[in-house]
Length: 411
Image (cartoon, rainbow, N blue to C red; front, side, top):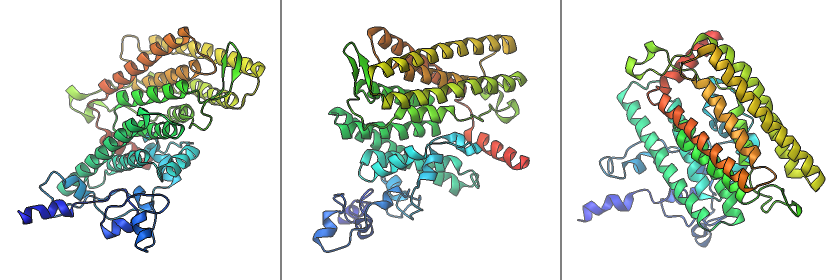
């Protein structure tokens, strides 16, 4: 029996502890800024930088065939810590295609908070593992590489589960710090679901995160008694992050019929789609920029008079969005009537709905607005589910490989 107990005693005791305890292979108490196990024994606590270093998957002989194989395969050789530029790139799969994302400020905020927040730490580890797994195209045909990718993917899911557990704990009895943690964690989990191509789950994170911002009044708001200050002025602006993420150009293209089995082929884009989507995207991107500017104005507003002026701007933007949608649907009827809506246009529709939800929840609320928001949220979930259905057989790795090959040939 003694021989059988050894592996359980030797399994990884510390996953997120300080660097010193990890080297000593003892359980860290994770006290901040320095753990007490180091302090009380006179050791120098090297801090928690290593929590940003994802584990390489090298199975050990003791645990290869046990339920802890994922943990043991994740034990390892550290990579460079995750920095602002890397996280900014990881936030969206669009950056794989050389699309620039302007979320460095958000990345800095997330990395700083993750130093002391387990939920954000786990979310970051999940995002990095899954993103690097997605991009590991080279040598992916070898059995060793395939096994490595599977272990990496499972590790990412494991960290995702831990992030969700910690997030639920934060929201069970909300405090200012707990709400901040929840919004930052939600931000990373939106990116995680995009990497997983699970747009339905992604939309739920978006909806719940925006609901938190509205419910806890992250910005000043109007009531019958005038302008009220934000109840929690230090909350992260998740809405701005989401708009930036979805306003970035989308170079996604559906696979051609020759690239997949006929029964697994998403509808191929017609030639007219290329003309339609970019023109409509330009107009929608302008509205996204205007929405971010409006939100900045609401954050700074100090008088009811100025707030009413911003409310008028909000209503104008909502009207412009409605006109945009009408134009999109008219053009679609003219260019490919009776055909499935191109995926590129569906992604535009997602951004459209996000902008409407954000604007409707800005500055004031009423039973009518709440009813509208419920309708918009349902539409967002339906559109995201449609993307899931259309792309359920899409080979993301092949799509990335083809896109990168095309980029190389252009250069």
